Amino acid sequence: MVGNRGACTSPTDAVPPTPAIARLLGLIVELTGQTPAQAVEAALDAYFRAEIIRLGNEGYAALRADPEAWAQYLAELKAWDVTLMDGVDPNEHWLPDGTCEIRELAGDDHARSAPR
Image (cartoon, rainbow, N blue to C red):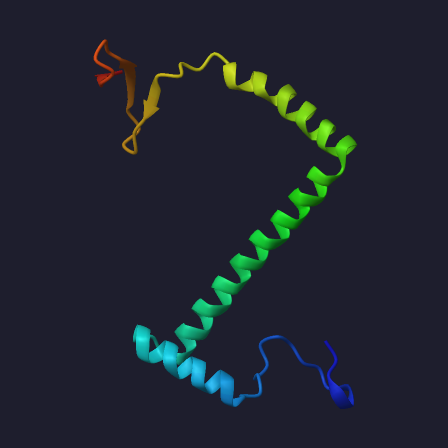
């Protein structure tokens, strides 16, 4: 980015402090015990994540508002649904150690496991 007087600036250049920034940062540091840098990083991360969700929701709402686009989307979902029946046993449950258990519902609706 180019700032005033043609100087190059970037989002990582110093942000001019305002009384509100100083007050809020001080409160966050006091509440969390984080360093100011950690608090700023956490706040920016939370803001970024919230914006990603907001933008996704806006896009989904726009899709839903367009009947033709929504119908195409639903048709695509239906087309992909067949991939769920790809021959993989739906009772397979792979464990973090790489082993597989077959879990089937017993008559009493409790899962039983059999190592594979």
